[in-house]
Image (tube, rainbow, N blue to C red; front, side):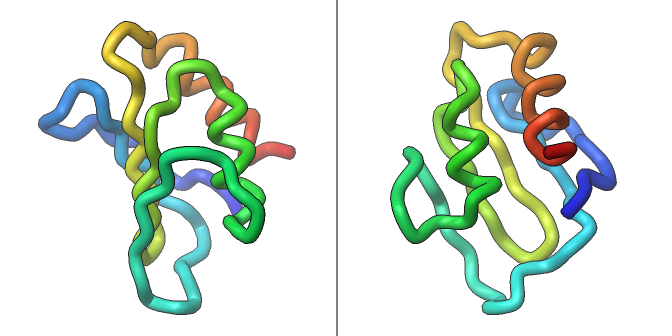
Length: 84
């Protein structure tokens, strides 16, 4: 799975990341921590300091960051997560 686009949202603490593959189950889920049974890429995102939650639906995720975290530090790490 690859990142196609990264877009700002009206909420400064949230970025929309469009992916190259869609969910097969056509559902949506909000994740707040790494847990067994979740997609591996979701769990890897929670290894990044400042990631607060991830909403996954269709072909995109919305990543919420902690208030004091910086997108300049988080986004390169998110991109690296998908390059693994």
